[in-house]
Amino acid sequence: NRLSQERKQWSLSDFEIGRALGKGNFGQVYLAREKQSGFVVALKVLYKKALADSKVERQLRREVEIQGNLRHPNILRLYGYFHDETRVFLILELAAKGELYKELQAQKKFPEEVAARYVAQMANALLYLHGKRVIHRDIKPENLLLGLKGELKIGDFGWSVKTGVTESRRRKTLCGTLDYLPPEIVEGRSHNEKVDLWSLGILLYEMLCGNPPFEEEDSYETTYRRIIHVDLRIPDHVSKEASDLIKKLLVYKSVERLPLRSVILHPFVTKHVQQAKRASSSSSSSSTR
Ligand SMILES: Cc1nn(C)cc1-c1nc2c(-c3cnn(Cc4ccccc4)c3)c(Cl)cnc2[nH]1
Image (tube, rainbow, N blue to C red; front, side):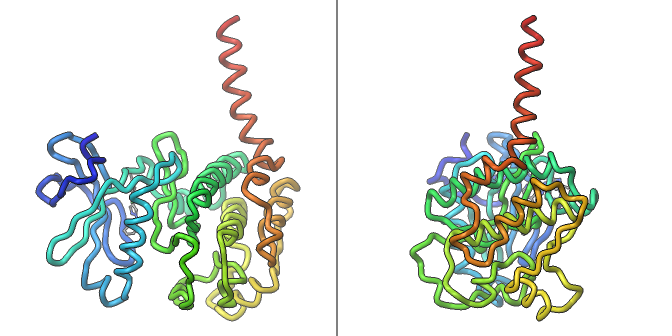
C-alpha cells in the first residue's frame, strides 16, 4: 500500500484524525485515516518538549529505526513518521482489539489456553527479533496490543537495542517499575537477549495469576531483593506444566533460561496451542466426510 512507500514525506494534512485510542508518557495515540488510500492507522503523537525534557530523543530515534525495519505478524508495523514544530508523529499499524493490559485488567487473569497462545506468539516474535540481533528489553502487558484475530502484537520498541551496542550507561528505567526487570539489569550488570526470556516468564506469571511475581506494594527495595533472590511463589491453581515453564524462564543465571525454541516446544504450549490446530484440522476433516 501507499503507506509503506519509504520515501514519501508525510504530513498531518494527509490524515483525517479520529478518536483518541490511548495515551502514554509523552503523548497520545489517535485513530487516523490516510486520505488518498483510505488506509486506517494508529497515529502516535509525541510532544517534542516532553521528549527533550526527558532526554529520550535518542531512544525515540532508535525505536523508529528498529521498528521501521521489522516485518512480523506479532510485531506492530511502523509505516513511517513525520514532525512539525512541536510534535513527532509515528504512523503505526492499527491493532484492532487494543491494549492487552486493559484485557488483563478487565479479566483479572487469562485462562491457560489463552496465555499459552500469547506465549507462543511472543516466543515467535522474540525468535524473529533475536535473529535480527534486537533485544526488546521491555516486554510487559503495557507494551502489547491485540490484532483483529486476537493475535498479540509487540507495540512499543522504546527500550529495544541492537546488540553489539554497549549499553554502558545504567538505564533510566530504574525510575519506572522494576517488576519486569531481570537480576542482571537491576544489578546494573551487562545483559544480552536473554533478558527477554526473563520478561516472558514474568508475563506468563502475570497472565495466569493477575499480578507480576515479585510485585510488592510500593516497596522498591523489597521488589529488588525478591528479584535478585528469585523469590518466586506460584499459586496452586497454576497447572504443573505452566509452573514448570515459569520456573525454567525465571532463572537467575541468564545462560540457564529456557531457549525460545524450547519454549515453543514446552508441554504447556503444545498442550494448548497444538490443540487449537488439531481442532481446526479435525473440523476440516469432518467437512470432507
Ligand atoms: C482499536 C483500539 N481500541 N481501543 C480501545 C484501543 C485501541 C488501540 N490502541 C492502539 C494503540 C495504542 C493506544 N494507546 N497506546 C499506548 C500508548 C499511547 C501513547 C504513547 C505510548 C503508548 C497504544 C496503538 Cl499504538 C495501535 N493500535 C491501537 N488500537
